[in-house]
Amino acid sequence: MIATVFTALNEASVKHAAAVRDAITHIKRVVREAQARSARERADNAKLADGVRAQRAASGGLSPAMNEMQKKARKFRVDNGLPVLEFFDPADASVHTKKTRVAPKSDDDEDFSQKRIMISDARNKP
Image (cartoon, rainbow, N blue to C red; front, top):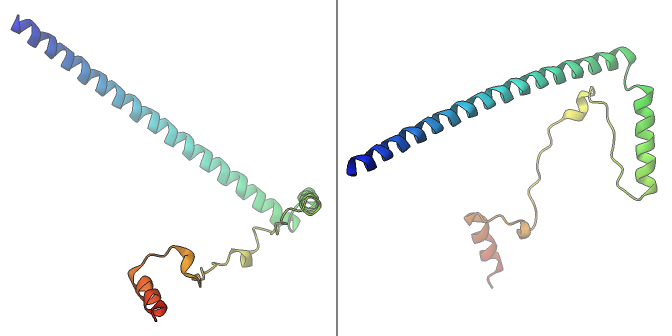
């Protein structure tokens, strides 16, 4: 009786180990396929972007259709009281400047650093 229990446990353990191995193999294959698909899509996107950049360089800027779409988008936003976004040419390098973050002036910014709390407490004491 005990031998049959151990045999059953051993068989279950072997089946479980095989199921885990199969699952891991399946997961690895799915990951490889997803990575390959992602790499293909990145390469396709890079080709498309290069083509658009070349077309813009050859035509001297945005196509007339894009300019017309921007005008329509601006008019729609103004007519509906929405904020108007500034459109820019991505080829313009001056647009891609790094912006620096300005530190907030108020204590309501949830900055819980010890130095700032101690300075704030010292200023508020009579």
